[in-house]
Amino acid sequence: ETGVTQTPRHLVMGMTNKKSLKCEQHLGHNAMYWYKQSAKKPLELMFVYNFKEQTENNSVPSRFSPECPNSSHLFLHLHTLQPEDSALYLCASSQGASSYEQYFGPGTRLTVT
Amino acid sequence: AQSVAQPEDQVNVAEGNPLTVKCTYSVSGNPYLFWYVQYPNRGLQFLLKYITGDNLVKGSYGFEAEFNKSQTSFHLKKPSALVSDSALYFCAVRPPMDSSYKLIFGSGTRLLVRP
Image (cartoon, each protein chain N blue to C red):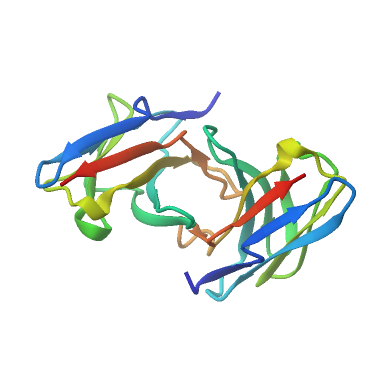
């Protein structure tokens, strides 16, 4: 899992807090993704960045705000979250056209109280 | 709508026996197909993919999958299961001609291999 790292691994926050999740990929990829994994639901794609440009926003509420300063780093800024936002947030990266599979980080387990 | 179905929430198999985890898809055109595995408190790990060519693809840890276009299926198989194979398995599809590289995942199948 050294290819894609995520910090923190666990986060507990109140509904009025502001926090950020960080993802870093060491694979030289040019596309990065945020997914949400909730219990008993399929993985939900949230955002896609390709060459630092956001190419997909899958109807995600504005309380989630992504940032991609360069091809190796991806952030997810959180504010005024709801308890139903508690989930495992996974970051992934892919090369793009020459390599179709995505490589995932270990995830951040988020609990909103 | 494009979708992936994993009809079994859980598959139970004895160690040493063959295992199959089922996946069917509904996508226009010729999709790219993937299997991932997730161990507890870990992210998803790539197992194998089908892009084109031979319908039987081999992947990590002795797993293989067979692409069947007529049945729109991509079942994951292993000839002899190990207790350490117990994990959550996800099938995923990337629609063809999709420039965003997004994957559509199934809901996952928990594999339990008993000693």
